[in-house]
Amino acid sequence: MPDIALIGEGTFLFEKLFQELGITYQFLQPGTLCSPFLPQYRMVMIPTGFANPQYSKTLPALQRMKSNIAEFVKKGGILTVFGPLVPEHDYEWLPLKLKYICDYGSHSLEPSLHECSCLLCTLTPECDGYLLPGDGFETVLKDAQDRAILVMAKYGAGMIVATSVHEFPAAEYIRWALGKAKPAKF
Image (cartoon, rainbow, N blue to C red; front, side):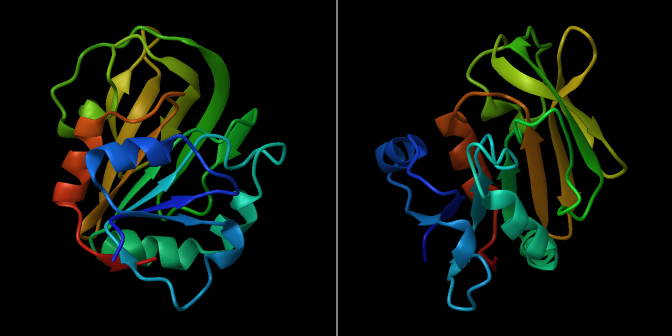
């Protein structure tokens, strides 16, 4: 069983990070997401640009997988999703309300003691936008304009972590998330 499913059309530098950490992963193209033959994963990661048709064809597959995504998280999986790279996006494929507004730039963030704030390696990351979290989400990190940059929500036995950070997740975050997650079918 791979630890992480990485969803997208092409290879990413994430693979190098996973290899350095000794973490098993499976690269999933959007067309394979509905397959009943996929194994269980502890974390599913959706990289930046998933909703932008110039970069990805992932969004239609995520929309078709809405109930599977909810079940994956409910049963203990951790879903980590980065920015969609479109002007605005409602994450209608998530079981909880969340909205994204594109606004690319470097941001100064307030430190946080929340356990998933370890996703960032720096408090001055590049971000491609900000988030408007709905009920169920907790804001973990905000920028100087009081806009959410990193949010998380517990859902069932798992959690959803969403960010507009336009950088790789820290190794510490991947270890933390895999330590919290339970294997679940996606």
